[in-house]
Each structure stands twice: as structure tokens, then as C-alpha cells.
Amino acid sequence: MKRAQRNAAADVPDSSTGAAASCALSIKEAAEVIRAGGLVAFPTETVYGLGANALDPAAVQKIFEMKGRPETSPLIVHVASVEMARELVAEWPPMAEELARLWWPGPLTLVLPKKNLVPDNVTAGLSTVGVRMPNHPIALELLEAAGVPIAAPSANRFTGLSPTTADHVRAAFGDAVPILEGGPCTVGIESTVVAIADGKLKLLRPGMISLGEIEHATVHIAEAAHPAPGMHQKHYSPRTRLILVRGASELPDRTGAYVWRAALGPAARAVRMPLDAAPYAAQLYRVLHQLDAENWPWIAVEMPPDAPDWSAIRDRLTRAAER
Ligand code: AMP
Ligand code: MG
Image 1 (cartoon, rainbow, N blue to C red):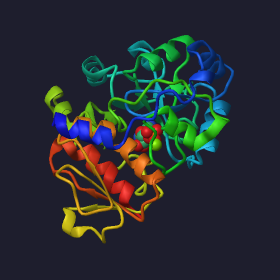
Image 2: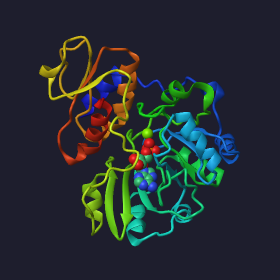
Image 3: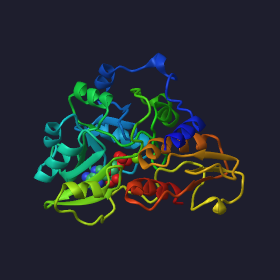
Image 4: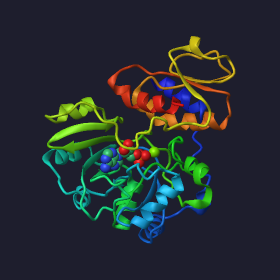
């Protein structure tokens, strides 16, 4: 596993360091922008977020405009503590307490009935709100300095690849959004989203915390059922055509880029990925951003194993390949 990781890292060097050091934004400045109703991009352990004061509907509206995101897609509200989350929700059942105790700060979003103070545009008109305490020191410092919950989807244009470095955010928004720099995201794909209603859990979006792990920790779990609002079929997509293959024999020809977990393949460009799910997830978007920028006629990704560890990654790849 270690070798595969190193190889992939060497194939696609991390370009997140250095670039904008000269105009670095401080946490204090970023907090002021948030409090004044502006947008700030900030790092979390999952992906970079495009944040606004979650209690200010005009600020939240700017997120939708900047991303080109449909207003039917609810936003996750980031908090610095369980206490901050409880100020936003009408109920905080034992299940929420337990999940937060086990996984916060971390890549787990809890969807619960909202209080009226949460603006309707945050939740796309739903009566529930998704809350999460991110496991990233800069995100937590920003939340504490701002003193308000921060609504934030991924800091990319709607349906595009999510950003896992500050450079990815810059590529999407240029100078239009100030960015708090925080290095590459360690988890690398979006949080697991679960709704809690009537003491039951429903998986709305798979993530690196698997349903299996959550099932271990709780008594009642419903089937993974309704897709979350905003779970558009096409999502997380590079501009380049992305196809999923079972092996090298399914490549269209030799002219494109092949992303896989084995030895070198018969393609013009091959990127070898880690054998394990966690390091694979941490690199996936960075690899796809890089290959997208290289303008290959296609990007083929070997579909990873049909196993619980890989379900979130398979979900994102399937959406990336939808057309
Ligand atoms: P993104 O901000 O792009 O990472 O997407 C947020 C994810 O959380 C989407 O899959 C939403 O559907 C889900 N989500 C956020 N808030 C809610 C909510 N109130 N009800 C259901 N799903 C939600
Ligand atoms: Mg997104």
C-alpha cells in the first residue's frame, strides 16, 4: 500500500503549497469577511468549503450565485461544537449525541429538524438542517473567530470536481473569493450524511465513515433509502469524459489517461492509485483535477472493489461518470 501511495503521489505532485503565500488571508480577516456577510473559502478535512454566515440569508444567497448551484440543494452548516449545533436544531436526540460523541469533529453530517433561526435558503426550504463539526484546525479556528455557524458547500462550480487544495479553489473562482490556505485535504471526499428522525437513521450520502461503522455504534438504522435532495446524478465531474472500466481491456484506445490500482497500463498516461480506500480517497480529486487540466481525450478509472470501505468512492466515481 505504501508503495502505491508514493507512486501515485509522485505522478501527481501536490501543487497546493506556495502559490498564493504572498496574499495569504489570516483567520481574523476571514472571520471579519464572514461576519460582514461575505464569502470565504476554507479548508476542511473533507474538501475545501465555500462559506458564509449561516444565519444571514443574503450572505447564503451569494454561495448559490457564486457556485451556480440550484437553490433546491441544501447546504451543510459547519459548527465549532456540539453546543453550536444544538442552537440550530429543534431536536438533539440521544442518537445525535452519540454520533457526535463518536465522530465529531469529523466527516459526518447529521440532518435534524431545524429551528426557525436557520434561514430557509440554507436548507432549500426543507424543515431539516445538516450540521457538522469539521476536523480541521483552520476551519475550527475560523468558526470560533467568526462566532457564527458557517454554511458551506464545496468550493467549486456546481457539478464540477470538488477542491482538495487551495489551488483547485483558485482555479474555480480566481480572485472572486478569498481563500484560507490549509494544505491538501486529508480525507479528500465529502462527508457521510445521515438523517435522524423518529430515533432512526437514514444514510443520505455515503462517505468515508461507512454505514457499517455507524450501524455498529447505534441500535436502529433504516435502509439507505431516499437520495438526499441535491444528490444530482451528475456531480463531482471533471470536464474530460470520465469512464469507469473493470480493467485495461475496456479502455477505448491508448490515447487517454488511466487511473488504477495495479501495474502500469496501456494508456498514454497512467496513474497508479493506493490499494486502500482511505489514501485512495485522499488523492482522488487531486488526481482527477490534474488529469482534467492535462486535456486527455478521456479519463478511464478502474472501478474499485464492491466492498463497504469503497462505497463512498464508488458513489463519487459513478456520479462523475454520469452524462
Ligand atoms: P455539499 O454541500 O455539496 O457537500 O452537499 C451537501 C449534502 O448534504 C447534499 O448531499 C445534501 O443533500 C445534504 N444535505 C444537507 N442538508 C440537508 C438536509 N436538510 N436534508 C437532506 N440532505 C441534506
Ligand atoms: Mg459539492
